[in-house]
Image (cartoon, rainbow, N blue to C red; front, side):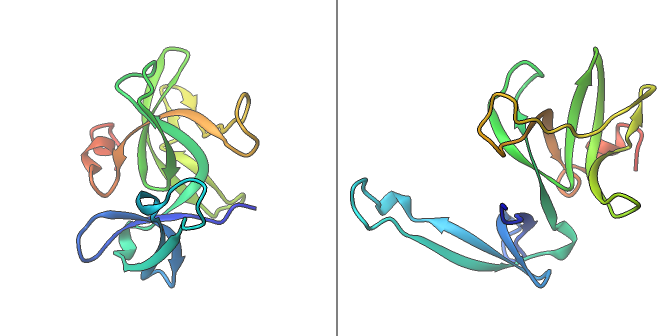
Length: 159
């Protein structure tokens, strides 16, 4: 089982940091000191550091990757999707914009909000077809997140 990863903004700098959540106030980030490592040596080191975070910005990795790119056909980089991300989806020529949200109602899960748009019900469909086992992907394009770019979701007619 993969460890659960979280993302939040650091209190001191406002920068995003990812890692393990500690008491909703800190993220323990693992830092690879690869720049000082040479292949074939045993000097490869990892270190970790705890950062105090703004708890209002905490978002959990949903276990699926999306992408950053200029269009639905141009993938510049795969990225992990987190709760609070604002994403764009395409289905049969229809485009919609959503925030990734957690629901603990009847069946706890991450979902796209608002799920009903353009006379369709939308959802996250991670697939590992053609990928290494356990590496799930959905063709959701990350536009931003609800903390840095709330206007993206508001301009879509949602709150």
